[in-house]
Length: 317
Image (cartoon, one colour):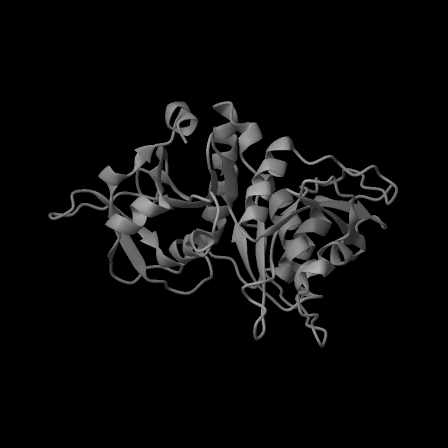
């Protein structure tokens, strides 16, 4: 029966990922750790899986064509036959995508079918649009997003051209990382897009909160007291959400660690984007590469402006 082994999945990732650095690896593990933490607090049905925001490129296209893509997590050695009954997306994801729809973002859940054993190229994504008043049906991915009028890529681009060592990616992170990467390649191979990852979406009592997650240790300061240095890239990502209308609010989540070497968990903290924008100030350039591998600018925010992320504060969102 059609399935993918862990070795086949890693081989695909070695071709799709341009490079790996410690920050990217830590970010991936932090996403998994946050979902585990929220599940342990009883909020597993109110947080989405990771995914992508894809925006069309080209004159006059960027503001109109925006899609949120959430992949099913493909588990190594699990069977995904071409005639399988595709899963019903979680209720919380329906609600999240409804908010996205109101904000001009079309949300899709993408499920996998595999034709041949250990051949990632035979994995086909089928997508169902969520957040609409009328129940939709699964369609092949490209067919499902066709009404958004993304620009079709005029010539083939080889997204699988790398030879990256993926042995440093933890086994626990491989299924989700592969599912996201395979979906990105499948979508970008057909359409011209600007695409950036979704760490997760939290469904609160009144609002929907796109999440950005980083792992940080506090830095002492005479004028601010302890503060957290945050990469400017995720800050810009939240600004994209903030530009959309609707009840999208935004959470910047920090996995606070004791030091850069041992990286033991001290606490989970968060700040809303509105609050973050009020208290952010410019910091020096990053001392080490960011998630993309390049050195990024930093902003700093007093640690005192972050709230603890626990059952009480989550219930109040």
